[in-house]
Image (cartoon, rainbow, N blue to C red; front, side, top):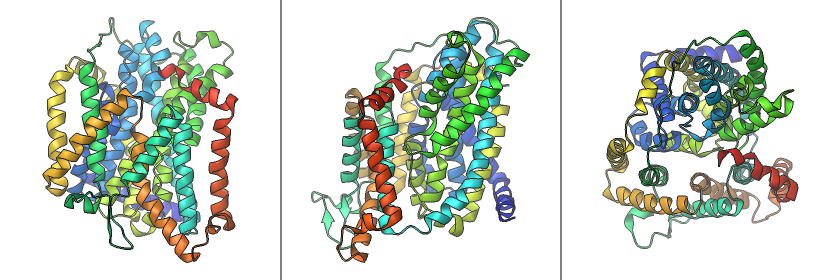
Length: 501
């Protein structure tokens, strides 16, 4: 009965005119940046982060969430029609989705992707509503030692389950942790690593770093690339899959949803890993694996469902434990902090309107995305003809104004520009910015909980292994490290993302 009451509260919050408008805006922006290659949800949310300062907390988070899962829808449209994935998780969609389009089944492919994503999004929303409250109850039993151990597990999980070089990811996380220490020490009041610069005494602004690493660096990287956009020849055709396509697609859709929900909850899982894992699963279960890559509906339905389910399931650790599982949820934590909302299990009790309004808005957003994507296919494809050289000045100005309005401080613009240059160099070296962002967000929280735990234990380091829950979390982190160190596991991890390259 409590769940029904909470959902009723969520519907009353989400169905206000203001929140519906921001949900629609987020879905539109998400679809747009999913369609346009080279932008992606992380840079867009980083750019829009300052805007949430002037919005009510619920409206701001609903809009940012809409951008995140809206990008998953938009990325599939161009992946199917022009073999150009708008964002990373849509890379797998190209393999069979575009082949269906080339076989004259573009409309059916778009419908399978949209309906599969809608089904997965609805199931993921139910999973969040069902599993979040009990997880939050468990989280209330966490002390400082447990929170520290949980954050250690989160960081290690994000490294192990994400793509890319392990040593580079570890280095980026450590750098993020160090950057999180810049500013005034909470306990002693002593300035640390400020190099005599007064503006650094309050720490490095999270939004400035995110906008530099993901916004400015992406712009510089995209300016190097020549547009390779092509138009789909022929008609899109009927938007209705035939009986055979539906028969092959729906079981894959169910399995993909299950994979996405399971992997999305894990730190570092999210949409990308879910889509690749689902494609591998479908290929292994199929009686005709040779059809994959040639327009098999299951090769499209599974990854698309996993993609959307993974995107939304990643909100579970964010809403229940206050732990970001990927760069997007780290930015969402940044948005909460802008409004002085402490992420974690207390959000459910102290801000129930925010918690349940956000969950219900995901279901509404999925409905909006189905309505937006299928009828407006022609419009989204036309947007591909807009040259990037026309887009980037507007993006650059938008970023600069956004970061300035946070504190009305020119120093933040210089910080953003500096991290933009450094972020561009990191991209050239193959270093991902997401681990840095996770380290920057979790660093101060880890330090605070570590010092609290040591204070309560009177300096006894064994408190982290004598408390059962804390020890279990540290053992899980150690198990992840041992597993990824095994040659066979490491090889499979490297092969999991081979299609991405």
